[in-house]
Amino acid sequence: MTFLQTLASNPQSMIVFSILVVAMLGLIIGLIALLLERQGNQQIQQRLADLGLQLLEQQEDYNKLEKLQFIGAQRQQRMDQVLQDIYSLIENNSQQLDQLKDQPNVHTSLASDVPSQSNYEHAIRMAKEGLTGERIQEICGLTEGEVNLILDLHQ
Image (cartoon, one colour):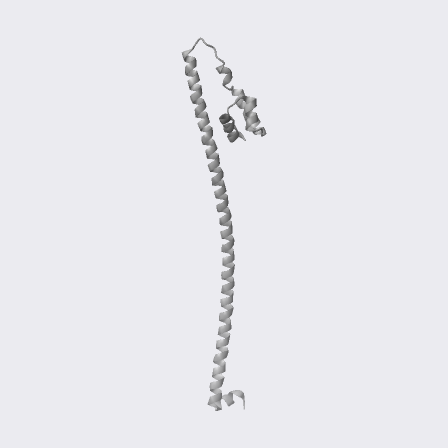
């Protein structure tokens, strides 16, 4: 007798065989589900790792932007100070000009106190060459505000 004939003749064997077949199918389906879940978990872990790297890159970009913002604020403060110095110079020069208008016959040394165009050009060249603001001030006879402006624009 063959295996199938034995199963067909004994109903209990048929039930046991059916249970074994169902159990095997359940085991196979369970294994497939576990493999798919494992593959899904690996994909999720890879995605999380990628997102972590992106987050680190964005944090670095944010830190760079904060640093640039800080540098920009410092430059803005320096430019504001330079502008205040320039406004003060303009005010002082206006006052000196008004005094000169009131005394047309008196020759003062005011003309020698006002830097010439060549002094500014010379200061710009020195700034480009990397000289310090103090040194440029000494050589060209410019104010600290003028030298700071030249340095900010040409260094």
